[in-house]
Length: 138
Image (cartoon, rainbow, N blue to C red):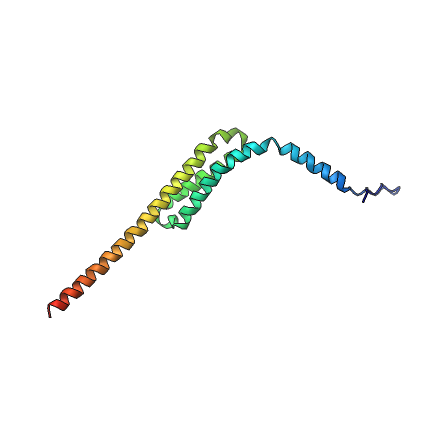
């Protein structure tokens, strides 16, 4: 449908699809130069985000709260650097620090869980040994 012409009473005319499409093209061309920079940024941020997510799933908040907190702060700084052109050069370093701290938090969390499980197994073995020793004494 073509756009309605402005009526004599001063009502505005309705935009046509062609005018809307033209506006979208203008917006797309305006942001086109940013696309390569954002494509380069995404993998680094994605790696850091995934590392923080893995650490969170490994209960790092309980077992390594200081490390996961620092990793989250560094991730936020990296995300801000991705948006701020003047900080964009710092993005790889910030994202890598966030990923490393998150990986360390996950590893420490997994170590704490494994250590707790080991202690539980040792306690069970000790209890079984004392039960067996008491049975032999009869």
